[in-house]
Image 1: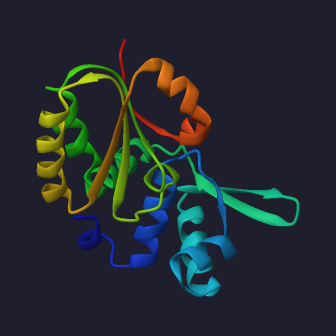
Image 2: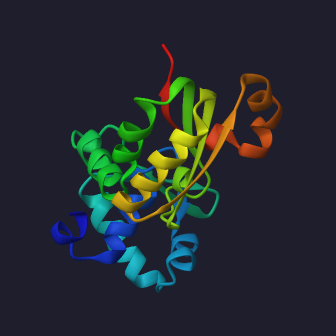
Amino acid sequence: MLDSLITSQTRIRLLLRFFLNPESTSYLRELAEEFGESTNAIRVELNRLEKAGLLESFENGRVKLYRANRKHPLFPEIQSMVRKFTGIDKLVGEVLQKLGHIQAAYIVGDYARGKDSGIIDLVLLGEVDEEYLHKLLRKAESLIHRRIRYLVLEREELERLQDVLKLDGALPLWKEG
């Protein structure tokens, strides 16, 4: 869907990088290395996205950092499109509706940092039917064409493993009211 609307693969990768996790920041050389592209190709797209107001930049020492502009009027729509493109919306809808008592769900790892590595790491807090979860995840994987790894934890385990899982950079999917 997104790739038929936007022909620049570099621009798509930048939108994924910044709109999957809008808290993340990156600089030009880091993005060029991550994408395996020239700094010039990345710079052109960063400038276009910044000029359109979709990205904002700021200086940190001698480095210019970029991040998603959360104040842009199209921010929610673009973030929704990016999530649909990666299949996160289908994953959440499929898995969380029928699983049992889930207190919270997070995406951690590459996707939480805005990198489309082809693997989605999911952390669920609560009690779930793991056999049913496994079936749902296999279905979701075939829909979104990405591998899903999961970890089900109880609150005490989550608190113990919080530093290892790096939940401060996690993408919250759902939290019990």
